[in-house]
Image 1 (cartoon, rainbow, N blue to C red):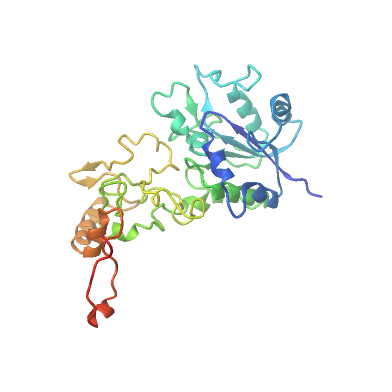
Image 2 (cartoon, rainbow, N blue to C red):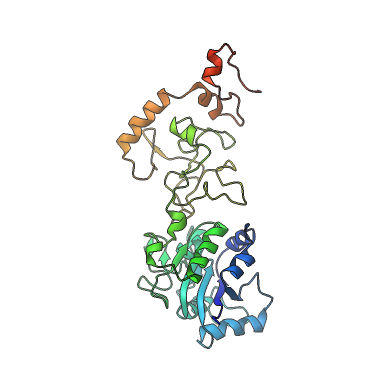
Amino acid sequence: MTRPVRLLWLQSGGCGGCTLSLLGAQGPDLVSALELAGVEIVWHPSLSAASGREARARIEAVASGDEPLDIFCLEGSVMTGPDGTGLFHRMAGTDEAMMRVIERVALRADYVLAVGSCAAFGGITAAGGNEVGAVGLAYDGRQAGGLLGPDFRSGKGLPVINIAGCPIHPDWFTQTVQQIAAGVFDERDIDEWQRPLAYTGHLVHHGCARNEFYEFKASAENLCDMGCMMEHLGCKGTQARADCNIRAWNGSGSCLDGNYPCINCTAPGFEEPGHEFTQTPKISGIPVGLPTDMPKAWFVALASLSKAATPARLKDNAARDRMVTLPRDKARDAGGAKPGKGKQ
């Protein structure tokens, strides 16, 4: 009988938001998804009953090589301060730097997963002066290296798999683990930032409910407005690599559906964009962050044409918090029906 796939999860410098997101997994729930994949949780701070000495014993058994480990997951950034000692964050009940525990466990695992942008790149924890020395497992922001170094390879010969996001969608994690458990995940399944292509093969822009407003550059002016948030409100959905508007969160929504712009949280350095998250920086009126792969001259030309052709319906609705002008069937209007507006 084949033994279960053994998974150990540790938390370091972060808020625990990725675990909270995972606990909201639906169809199936997180525990069922792992059971169906044949995954056994060696220890997880929220899912395991063991604590204190018992938890430390389980972790040490893996770190010392006494017990095998298939998948190691880290949530939260690695705290390397002060002065590279890692002693700002110690293993509970010991004087050992958590940084060293993470390193020892990672060297024993067949697959190493950085769960969330903090574990991948440093994330929110690394923002500002970063006095705590927060880094990711394989990256320090956009710089390759992190705790494990740019040349790190796990037991199966793979680099760290960066399931980036702040927080991650539950399916990004469960799908990756299911592929690993089935023996079908390899280096061809990750992108240039070592993120799973299953979700970074898309742009957040794909499937956005505001795409018609984007096409005609009918822009929102306030967060509660219905129009496109790229031109004025800092939305990076045309640049961000994720499937947030295709793979709905909690079965129904996304940041954009909640009237907040995409801040590109799956990318390194998203936490310090150099401007307010809800502000689009511009030069001579042209947004600095243009859609991926689009030359600036083309964007300017297309934007001008699009605005000139914007239907009145979209102009009416873009800067409103609800639809005031409804779509009309031209054939019906040609038959004598009076055009009208929706409820004010």
